[in-house]
Amino acid sequence: MRDVCEEGSVSAVSASPAALGSAPLDPVRALQHALYRAAKADPGRRFHALWDKVLRRDVLWRAWAAVRRNNGAPGIDATTLADVEEYGVSRFLDELATEVRDGSYRPLPARRVFIPKPGSQEKRPLSIPPVRDRVVQAALKIVLEPVFEADFLRCSFGFRPGRGTHDALQVVIDESWRGRCWVVETDIANCFEAIPLDKLMCAVEERICDQPVLKLLRVMLRAGVMEDGQVRRPVTGTPQGGVISPVLCNVYLHRLDRVWDVREHGVLVRYADDALVMCRSREQAEAALKRLRGLLADLGLEPKEAKTRIVHLKAGGEGFTFLGFHHQMVRSPARSGKRQVTFLARWPAGKAMQHARDRLRELTDRSRVRVPVEWVVQEMNWFLKGWAAYFRYGNSARRFSQLQWYAGMRLGLFVAKRHRRGRGFGRWVVGVASPDRLGLVSLDGTVVAPRPNRPWRGMPNAGGERRR
Image (cartoon, rainbow, N blue to C red; front, side, top):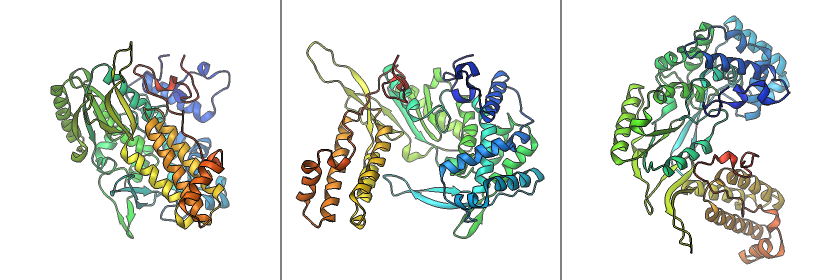
């Protein structure tokens, strides 16, 4: 079997049983494995017998487990995950399966909320379906995702199992090293909300012809959202926040991926609605941008003009921001006996740093002065470890040092406020009196610098693996 990582697919879904060792696949994983292999073996096949698989008890249990693990907020019916557990999960799933099977199931409108974008005054619309609808969507995702994963291409990285942001970032490093130093940077405007439903269903029907499944999808997409007490049922969009929305977004944007010509227009790197094209010349970059605009227009979408531009990567140039990192071409320091090398470096973007500082400020705010110091340190450590786990794969040592200093400073201020003493007292307690800075995590020595043509997963401590 071909290397599934090279095919842009999920090793967990598509790997052969031999590759997984002697332990057999669990039934749900075996189902996904079979669907993936069937779809991969016949790219023209349309699946017509998926309805019974969506309603399988083990699939519904796996869907519930995924929803419970996400620990989301309730929808417009105010039913929480705890309410479902108190009611009885088995009873809840039995009743839900019966409703879906006999056709009486009707999804409720999603609850619309607006969440702030980190480092920006803008707010992102988020739709929160009720728990019951999230479970049905998760069951559909379990069955449909492996079918479409067999088709998705290597240029797509967002919301795909086995692929993520650092895989996309590694492609950027590799292509810049190969001489593609003109970058088309863009973002699809309001992508999730703007996808035409009729065209989306046509894309789904290229692979799925099971009418009950298609009918269920249509009902979900037309359930609408409730905002300010009013139900809106737009004719476009798959609400951002729905469990199955990321898969449907990738299904639709796959139409862009499969017609993209790398030789003519450069290397496309797409993370959901965020896209880059790595080109060898300004002329190619301009042609790529024109082609991108045309393809998006054919899909009923358009790029966000404020985030669309062409950037030339050169030493001392402005660089660009992608997936939370700022990328900039830099020259290595001059050293005796070693020639200088120009390479693409990356570090946490300004918005990411501001988001981290804002979070640390919230955790050490004066309003929390009665919270025990140990609890505050633990919460700071949780945040810092999670933040650093993402940004450590970059040239981030200087930014990590800045954030570590800021965290220590904020903790010192918190200690001073708690004891009603001056700032100097807090600095002394954290920096001198306590050898381990009251248990505050250290970010020193955790950075892993990226290297061209060396997969980031092979770097020491990357995903638990080591370079071979």
